[in-house]
Length: 167
Image (tube, rainbow, N blue to C red):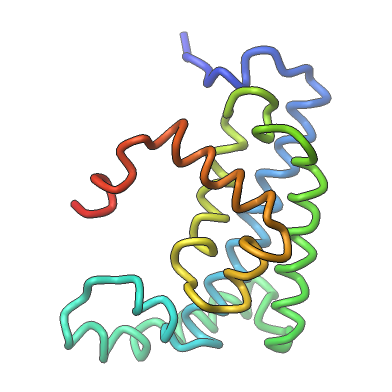
């Protein structure tokens, strides 16, 4: 028998359906916006500030990632948009997440669930891997409840966060 996360246990079918939509919004829209901005539009400049790569990889990474990512993003469709449109789509996505979260602690209610793991994964990429960018500001300033949410998830689900990311 599969063990469900606490947030998934008491969900109604309607709530499960809505949360599946939230998960898809993050995994099929926010994901593509972030990787297109990070690897192609920004050429990894901001991202590389958060990584501990060798000098060679710091130099080579943007060249190896840029064009293949653009090609994949063209197939997906996000690369048909301008840089400003990609930012607007990301902002609209964050607004939708902020609206859905409302005053709840987690997307699944009082406890984190499966959808929370997906949302946290997407938002964490912006919050902790885009320092100083307008994308980071979306989560930390424009929609601060998303920043609070990320910190709650980090504390509740990953109390050993610092240890995990340093290994």
